[in-house]
Amino acid sequence: MVDMENLQKIWARGISSNIGAAVKSQDELKQLLTSKVKTSVSQINRNMLIDAIIALAIGVGMIAFTIYLHLENQGFVIASILLVIALLIIHYRVKYRYFNKVGLEAESIKKSIEKLVKQLTLYKKIYFWTIPSLTALLFTIVHILLFNHLIGPWLNNPEFWVWEAVVIPITASVFLIVKLLFNYMYGKQLMQLKGYLKELGD
Amino acid sequence: MEQEFLEVIDENQRIIHKVCKVYARTIEAHNDLFQEILLQLWKSWGNFKYHSKVSTWMYRVALNTAITHAKKEMRIKDKRQELADETIFQSKPEAYEQDDFDKLQLAINKLSKPDKAIILLYLEQHSYKDIAGMMGITETNVGAKINRIKNKLKGIMNG
Image 1: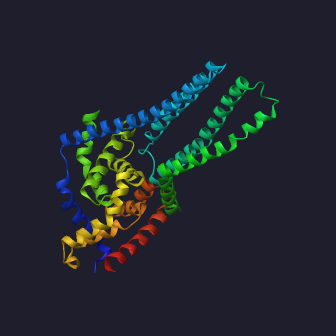
Image 2: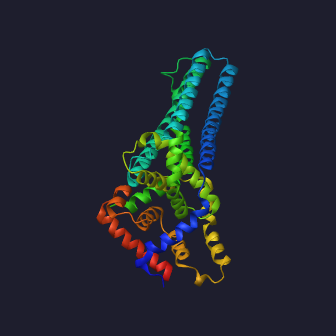
Image 3: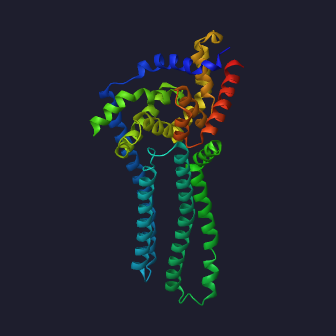
């Protein structure tokens, strides 16, 4: 039977002999820190690069398609696509800066978890609304320009609105994909953090 | 700045090791977490400015990192935790003869992340007031939680 009144003594006796071998010299600490900083920065850069490449590849594909269609307002369509790409790249940049600046120093553990939950929830909302909205906007712009080019004035043409209705399932699908993606990336962490908060509740 | 930081860490690195000991079960996980905590301490070093005790700052950052850090490789290691526990027992067939510290460590491993933080601070003989400040909960709650955690540990260790 372990004496529960002596837990602190048991711990003190055991821990000092247990971590003795793991203690590092100042040079080792410096090496560890340097390699970790480098890995961390290169990881962020690699993730950003992958995100940017994907955004650019999609954008270039869309631009190529626009050129292939010989649209009247090609310049405007390309500018719109480039704007969306720029927004996506800015979003990735903000995202990585944001998640790497979570301050852990000044606050209590509960506050830090609350802050992280708040940030993730806010990010979730932005993610859920921005990407489907941008998709719907881009679809509508391309649809208007294509309709103008191939058929004629779009505003009072019922055929335009019939085709425009496609934007609803497209946006809904994008929303679902975004939701699945977010849950895959942060869902478990968010749930765990909320659980910890509940546990720490007064 | 870096030299001063390294000196402070060097003098107090046992704090990081203790946190790692509580949150990581394999040597690999221990080293990963140690490096991550070191990085987070370095990131927050600029804002620290000795407004609180070095040890308090280090515990806060280290525990925050251990609780909120959820890397993929750690999740993979989580799946190996049961196996790691078994290995500890298997390497010592006379498991029932393990010393109390091993039993305590294994029992702590079964606690939730916030409970691990509270019990570590308690075992390190921090006052209820300090624990309340670091955890962001009331002193009364700290007392209640420590009693509950001790009962849990008792159940695991003596059960």
